[in-house]
Image (cartoon, rainbow, N blue to C red; front, side, top):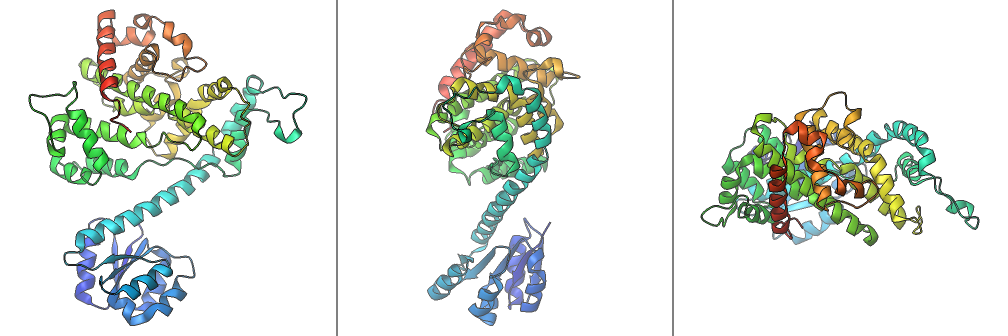
Length: 446
């Protein structure tokens, strides 16, 4: 872990700042410009006390910041307007040195570092998925015959694409795809859970996000959780939901933000895919709660939420390619959806590997539509498989190639239903709960 440098000519002030930042990061205190130059390129951030800036002046820092550098954050008196203008012009961040500035400094520093980490993660994502291009190209060549489009005789050479997948692989190679990243609040929440944070600590953390707080309160007052009294604050909501369910819905709220595109043509597809994923996650939760003998040790709600992440990824890529005129508007919607259906498992597994999800999640993404290919089938995979079929049968799907037929299947007679011991009355009960939840959730996850 790279350290955060605290630069100050005032030893007491340096120690005070260090204690704030050390709650989240490794810290190194320096008092000289030479020491700053030595440590600059191995640090995550530089936090300047105004005393250090006054000692060395604007010219020193303007020269220093002409070369590659980590972010600079300066603590500065609120009345020193000229210095604020000067440091902003050379690319520094600042935070006002008001009484009890500690909380503001910590929040500002963490926000800046989160933004930097997300940028680095996006860059690393491109490199990681490039390594998997050979595998994707091999799969593309094997299935190429089924994916080729026939070009019309009038088509110009530069307009003819061998297939949508070929174009996707091509832009992978060129590093032109902007890969999605997991929202930082979800990652931090998981770390807090791993450290056995209590309800109060979780509540204080989640209060930072108004959208998450309000949604959790609304969910806690839904029919599935509703108590005698109505919850009115976040603490009450978390108390009723419990940490496990709170984590589930924070994951849902965070993942909702991934379902976005600038291509209006694809917005409807992403909305349908979101509803399908949320519905699948909820049925997984119902099964987890109802079938206690399964002894599921996995977070099947989040597995259900992410099982079609490859479809989301591919649809977003295709939406972007159409905006850039690399896929023509004349391509049939059925072909776009067919490409997403055929290849989403491979792309989804690659994305979860990049996000460093456990192997159990990667197996769900890889095999939820193809149990025959799995060397072994966990109870969690049975749960997600059935949930996926059930929500499609109720109309929560993309209605693409391969989905329509599943509306007609007998759910009770499916392999996963038999393995889980589900009968017709249980399945009808699950359907009623899902319908009620999806109706109540309208507008919650926006």
